[in-house]
Length: 230
Image (tube, rainbow, N blue to C red; front, side, top):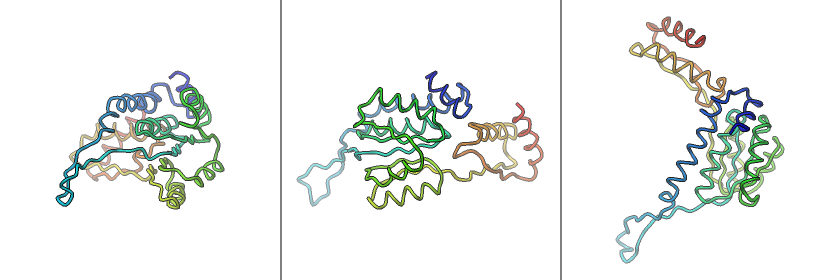
């Protein structure tokens, strides 16, 4: 954990506290959750049998997709690589990880951890930049998990559609905060500033702008300035 935090600090300047809160702690939580629930998620579940097939027994049974491609970004480089991997493994898949070229220290430690823990035919790491991304998208995967920009998300979906590969796209957008006159202004300011300054604002759901009732605007601005200094 100390080595992971040191890598994240080298790439992004995050403190160990913030790295635990936003990356390694959440990953540990996901591992614990999956260890506890995977057996029930994988269990066969009885469902009603249609009248026309009354002699039959009907059930649903979850099954792995197969080979999963996980393409992660630089802003949460550890969390958004390892957490999807936890879920892919829990569901019985193999995986290829493609960490970001813009967070090299974290990508290197991810590579080290994965190679120490898994045979390459089970979980593999591909290092590199755009050229490697393009190369991977030419291949046929059974599921793709991508976090990044809308522009690249469209490109991922276009390539995936050629094989009818299902995708999960986690893409950045513009997130408003709405503050009406009944709000607790001090609390609203505290939460808005926390959400905006977490990870230096590099979070897909960070507040981008505020819609505020004119009657509380001056007080909100005053409280936001106070919270920023704090």
